[in-house]
Length: 89
Image (cartoon, rainbow, N blue to C red; front, side):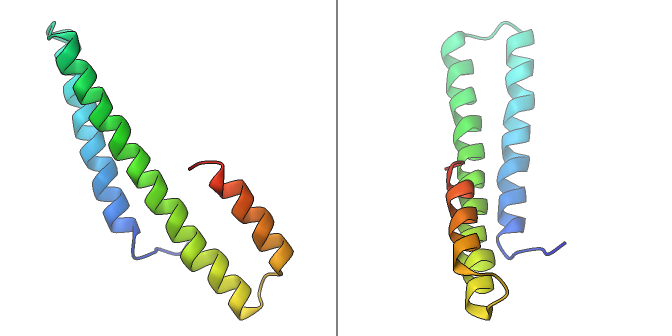
C-alpha cells in the first residue's frame, strides 16, 4: 500500500471531522439548539467533502498520470478509471 504525500493532510481533516461529529452527538444528547447542530453538521460535511476532493485529485495527479506516463497503464484504462473516480467529486 502506497502512502501519498496528501494522506497525512486528509487524515488530519477526517480526524477533525470525527471530533466535530462526536461533539454533535453530545449536542443532540444534551438538547442543544437545532441551528447550532445544523451548523456543526455542515462543518463536518464540508470537512469530509474536502478530504474526498483532496484524495480524488491526488489519485488523478499522481496515480493515473504517473501510470500513463510510465506506460504501466494504457490511456483507455486510465480514462475509464478517471471517469469512475470523478463520480465521487
